[in-house]
Amino acid sequence: MGRRFQASMFNVVVDEQENGMYLYNSYKGLDSIKEVAPAAREKVKDYLSGRKVDESDDPILNELIENRFMVPELYDERADREQLFYEYTMEDTLDITVHTTDACNFRCKYCALDFKTNVISKDVQDRIIKLIARNVNKYSRVHIDWFGGEPLIGIDAIEYISEKVIDICRKAKKPYTGSITTNGYLLTKENVEKLIKSRVANYTITVDGLKETHDNQRIYMDGGPTWDRIIGNLEGIRDNVKNRYISVVIRGNFTKEMLKDLPEFYNLLNDKFGKDPRFSFFVRPAGDWGGERVKLIADHLMPYSQMAEVYNYLAENQKDLKCIINLYNIHTCGAMCRSNKKNRYVITSYGKVQKCETCRPEHEIGEISKDGRLDTDKHLEAVWTVGFRRNKREQCDECPLSCSCLWGNCPKIGVLNPKDKNCGYITEYKELIKLAAKTYDVETLGAEA
Image 1 (cartoon, rainbow, N blue to C red):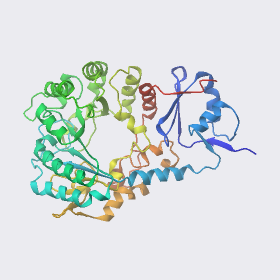
Image 2 (cartoon, rainbow, N blue to C red):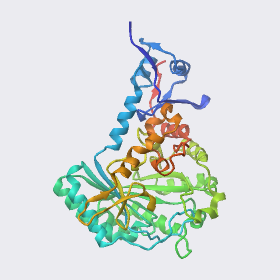
Image 3 (spheres, rainbow, N blue to C red):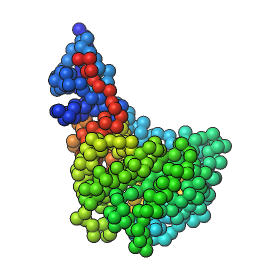
Image 4 (cartoon, rainbow, N blue to C red):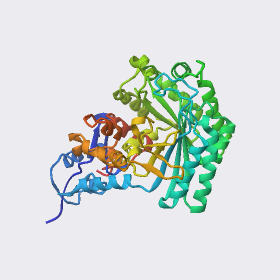
């Protein structure tokens, strides 16, 4: 007797009727997405309905098996999922986020910062350098993500630490990379040259819509506008930076006001940056990330569910400027927070060590000693890396998306509030799958049917 097959527990079927049918499998991630040929749709739905199927020479069945939409009967897919979790969390990159300062030159209406003025001291900088020097040979590579406050207020620290770490990694024959999240106001030609010399290759800059909306949401500390300066700096990178290996992500934190301007905003960004493949677009709803300021605009915040409108618009109006970062959520392990990783740490401007980028005192797990040792509470590290999974929701085990988030979309929820059983993952995954299909011009399953 031949083998029997059943539908994978990680399948998602997006059936848009006249607008197409798409298949996705979270174990295989973004590469799994297939459009189903119209003539094959009924047969595909039958095969994936839950019944057991004997192997045959049916080309549609064999395509489903080849792409893991069908797996052998009694196949233990949960074991594969556990393997993914351990591979992701134990990945051997030393991944550090450094907050160069708590200070910021903006007063964004949704910001959770309390606008302290501390800038990372020379002592803390040297501790970070010693930490990397002591441990570089334990890892395959080193990555530093520069964060804040506004990290470019601490550009001198970025230069100093980077120069030392680049030399350490060169001698150890380990790759070193850097990235930065900045409001873009200080991203001048001079500072970009310094960052590129410091091996900072990935840049994330927030632009909240058209000029009027952005200048109302992302205000300079003296109350002035910021849009023109940021756009000018981005145009400067486009026109003057010849390095082909950098990437620039333009992020929009969407409020209700931005939603109505989406077509004009996207077209403007596409006209300015769409022909440069180094640029991409990243959309998120502005959220209540803590603090008092956001309460003043609570009525202007939009629920995450409204992002479906954004994704649908971008899917149907895709131009040169792509939303690559949003699609990470449907990569295998792509929706897991980096805080899950054993070798990932956040270092505050005070030298404290955390796992979460929000830099709250309750997230601290230790500090860096003067001789560069990670003096951390191993129990707290374990809680962030694996302990939060004990608090998974009942529906998580059967969820077809579980190879994307592996219950680690936001471990902070499970760590600080174990009784919170709300799913932290996106609800608009079907719209993201369709956006991915339009972005990458995916293969058609059953084309020969």
